Length: 240
Image 1 (cartoon, rainbow, N blue to C red):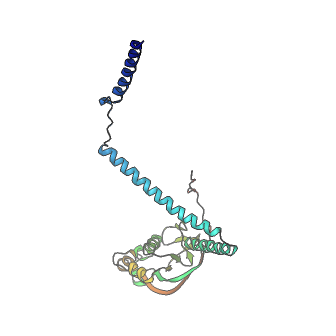
Image 2: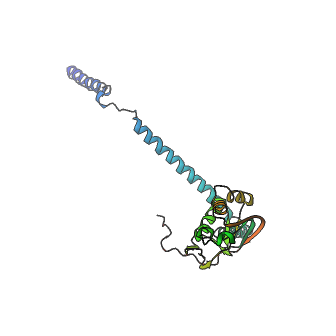
Image 3: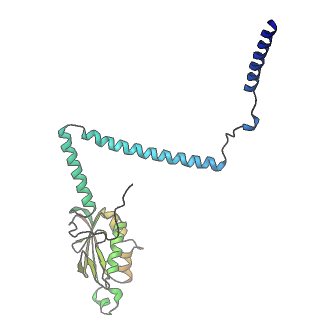
């Protein structure tokens, strides 16, 4: 009987020792490499930077929308204030798009064909052409003009057509020389920019003898664009 108990004890001891040994086996062939290659590190760094930028943008949007939401949760009096702010923002956007009358400091430019002694030669270079006005409008925009008007016609994107020769069509109205151009913006900056030696307006004066008169104004009023803008090809992008 004692012999059987000894065998059983020995058997159990062997099992326990076997388990302990198996738990301490070193699986050398299953080592994991925790180091990244240069490309893997660069990709991970780029992805992290992208995620940080997205998070920053989302935080900024959250603060903006949360601020607006807080306003909506306030009293009835604050709601009227919010409505006023929305109307003011809408008014500003309409002014930027040219749909509202605007006023402020700026410059006026009068452009006319060359004086008679040059004009008598019949040289086309001494006449003001449609492309001259296009170049002047673009230069005024580059000089920071916030609103532009030519012969009483408000200039907004897509409101002028190429007519050829000395004619230009603005808001479906055909205009010829002389051209009276008004621009609202920083009057000193615009005057200096338009009269630079390398500028198009200055070349018209010197090389082609075109009559040009530039004056700064403390107050200019430019009327709203009265036409309608239609987009045939450009369509709003639908966000997913």
